[in-house]
Length: 76
Image 1 (tube, one colour):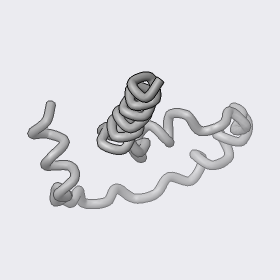
Image 2 (cartoon, one colour):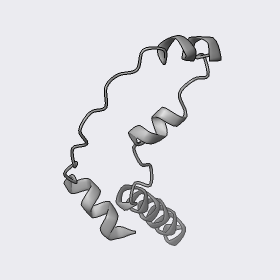
Image 3 (cartoon, rainbow, N blue to C red):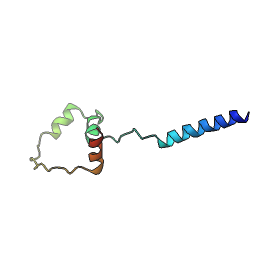
Image 4 (cartoon, rainbow, N blue to C red):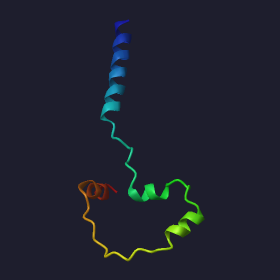
């Protein structure tokens, strides 16, 4: 009986430890992904009115990689 209880407790402790120490796999969605998955409330008519007056081209600025971006690149 004591052996059964000991086995049960050790099993529970093992699963809890695994759950705590498990790496998080959920990634934060990127800006690009958010733009792609934007709701399709914008119709062709509304898109035409917004693109009628175009903005002047901006000079492209190189973006500095964040620490998270660098580590993500190293991992893959």
